[in-house]
Structure formats: structure tokens, C-alpha cells
Amino acid sequence: MNWAVILSGFLSGLIGAMGLGGGGVLLIYLTVFANTEQMAAQGVNLLFFLPIGLLSVIIYSIKRQIVWKTVLKMWLGGLVGVAAGFLLAKTLDTYYLSKIFASFLVIFGTVGFIKAIKQKRQG
Image (cartoon, rainbow, N blue to C red; front, side, top):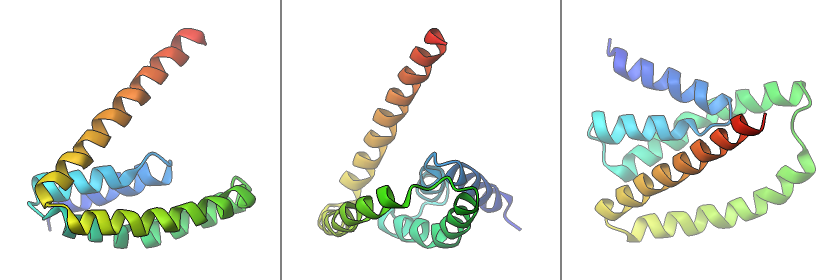
């Protein structure tokens, strides 16, 4: 049994259920540690999150923590974004795709870190 695979799945599900982007953990594991090609890792990530996302939606719906009017509006943009992202990922070399992904992680991580520091100082 490969404990690294189980641990990456656990952490991805845990972080994803908290709305923190568990796909980042899974993609990092697959591309860096399991030497999976970026496009294949993205496919695994999407398939992995179907049951995880469904369970999270059910739990959050029961707790009435989903504003469905907002979600429905966002879905339209999301569908267009998925098509554009797929076409972009399909045309880009894996080298550039992995660099873009890493850049997003650094940017969003830095912004999140700065916001957390500001909130801590204010409260």
C-alpha cells in the first residue's frame, strides 16, 4: 500500500471540503512526487473531486450554507471558463502549463498570507 497516495488523497479531500483548493495538493503530489504529466494530473484531479465535491455539496446544503442564486450565476461563467481553460491547456506545452500553475499557487498563496496578516492585526 502506498501511504503517500492515500495521504495526498486525504489532504486533498480535507482541504477541498474546507473550500481551500484541495486540487493544489493533489496536483503538486501528482506532478512533483508521482512524476505524472500535468495534463494527466489535471484529469485525475477533476475525476477525484467529483465524489468529494458532491459529498461536500450535500453537507453544505443540509447546513443551508449555499446561496444557490449566486451559484447558478457563477456556473455560467464557470462553464465558459472550463471551455477556455481546456483549449488553452490543450494548446500550451506542458512546461508552460506547469509554470502557470506554479505561478498561480505562489500568487494566491502570497495574497492569502498577506490578507491573513492584515486580519490578525485588525482583530
